[in-house]
Length: 353
Picture 1 (cartoon, helix red, strand yellow):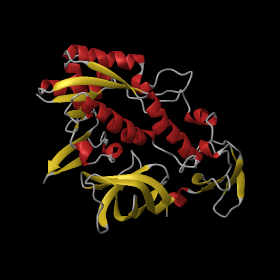
Picture 2 (cartoon, one colour):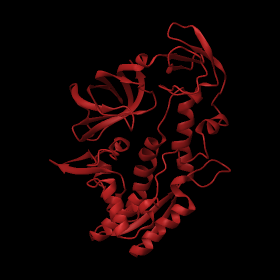
Picture 3 (cartoon, one colour):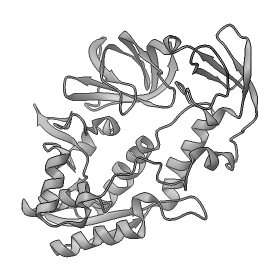
Picture 4 (tube, one colour):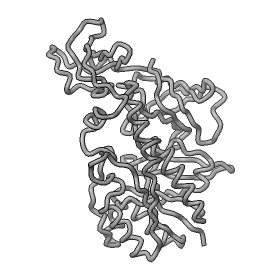
């Protein structure tokens, strides 16, 4: 019998993942990560006392062990400090990408193997397939819920030990299975907020060392002063609200210029860009393409994958040039490349052309 550690959050997805694997005959263990949270705040949303109780209850129902792993220090170093540093550079990071890379599919996978598990499983809506001796990462069948974007950093070593039991189901089917099995998480709403802050991330950033909220000029594309901003970390590319500028047409943030401590704004049409350079690029196969390849690519989690040309330029860098201009390509976000449903890889957007 093969053993699997299921990464649990107390929510419906990870709960059903554990139930399905148990029903399929795996020897299941539940595991929850204890993660860092802002001082003085409630518990991290991913591991609150309620979430721990709910996850533990599912494991009790299945008659399987439940483990808690203390990753607070590592989460602070690899995720929170990274998040703060990126905003200090005038970028907009996605902390979930750092967490998946360093914590969930790094440390937690290591713990799973140390416990004697053959696999780590999660409730992500994506699929793993082995073809011609290679592991592939594929989109989930539920296009509205597909989470392959946040898993692009997984390579052959990780995929060889990963189970994604929900990738072939829709969210509605998963909720129906949870109701059928009378799981308390069946109707729980999902949080889309940053897990380690109490409220507005800008308030969190304002008290972090190395992040400067210094007022500066808001400039138009011609360099004319349009107003004053409240501090660059309070803004992101494409932002329209909160600029405090009276103008005949709606204005959007086009650029965060840390050298001049300036915010550059313009019209919506000015947001469109065709090309980006990504760094920290990894490929699922472990091998970059030798020649430029036609792909589709997503520039943020909720973006629509658009036609593009991917060119590996050496080291950990690649260029992506879109067939049609894309709105608000944002340094610090992930870009993920696909061939139809198959994830080729991705990286962090560094420069925009």
